[in-house]
Amino acid sequence: MTKLVLPRVVLGNRGDIASRWGIITALHRIGVKDVSVFCDSPENIPPIPYPAYVYGKLRNLLLTREGWKALRAADTVLWAGGLDLQDDSSLAKLVYLWVIFRVYRAMGLRIWCFLQGVGPLNTRIGRGIAKGVLKLVDRFVARDPKSMKLLQEIYPGGDYACAHDSVFLPGLETDPKLIETDKFQPIFSNRPELLIGFNVRIWFHFSSSLLPYEFNQRAYQRRAKEQMEDLVTASCEAVARLSEAYDTRVVLLSGYQPGVVSWEDDLPWLAQIKQSCQDEEVILFDAPMTMPEYFAFVSSLDLVIGMRLHTVLTAMRLGVPGINLSYTLKGDGILSDMGLGDYVLKLDDFMRSPNLAVEKAACIVEDMAGHRERVRVAVDEAIEENEKVFRGLFE
Image (cartoon, rainbow, N blue to C red; front, side, top):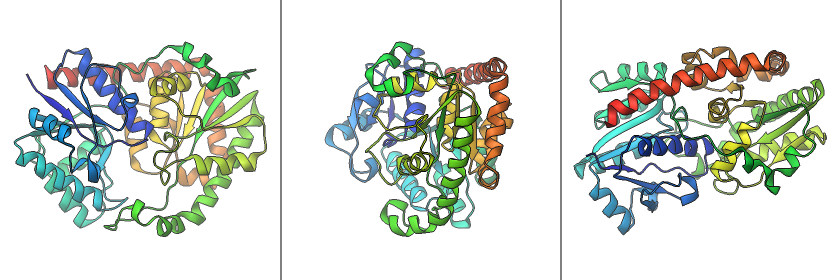
């Protein structure tokens, strides 16, 4: 029986937490018993009787004593969810990945990368380090065909398979009664005809330098400043039009849990949108939520428009149509593979013409039942395919 350990560090990112949530739930569902999980809080993993361990220093490179014992007791590292093989943010992530995978191999552990994205990899040195990482990996299941193609280009000798993002696994469904808590009263009291979730994130700030963003925040923020101002302006225009178009309440929703990773949180940009709109039907929702609460909350929306890919994917997984404001190829790759490519709007196009998002939203609203059914069919197919890959890997 395989003894799994999930050591990948996830801090505050609701999309990565949702991806890990789906994987852990699916492991338990098919009867995999020996699984250890590293996390920052037990609230961020499903209530399943798998032992949980706190992260060590240097993103779990220097383990706690208990974490070290858990790693030594395993035989397979399941590096699951998210996207690490890329060089647009910095080369540090790739170097870190190569180092920590070398440590795992020195301990005699197999490494399975599961339902991860790949790319962009635009630099020669980035591709070189990525190739070195892939040589250490025993099996890689990509989450979309474009990631799969990039894997095969960089290191053709790997053991690869392709499926869908890990939010498309059973286990994200929750009790809708959770929305009756006082926490959600500002959103659901006197509910209008439509509830639309809206999300943006900081972008335009990444570079392929060695130094990660969190160690040089001022320089990265200066790099993004002008274009982020344009993005906020475009978002204000789109949100105002959405709020006026129907009996609509627009909920500004972050893809991060508040107060965890300040330099990545979406809330400062959403707060600027709220401040500019001056509309009581545009609500900034910044309350902390457990993941079941987050899933229940998102499932109660009618439409989600988001830059954060997993804000949209989670909504679709829960039956809510979504529009991805795509800033890289990953959104187009994943949704096109599901037959939902027309739910993608390129970020540059949105910034030039915010009304494009309003027009896409109008098309969905005018046939909400049809779009919900279309999303449901695509999601069911993705879940079925993921389950086949999952069972083949672990049974």
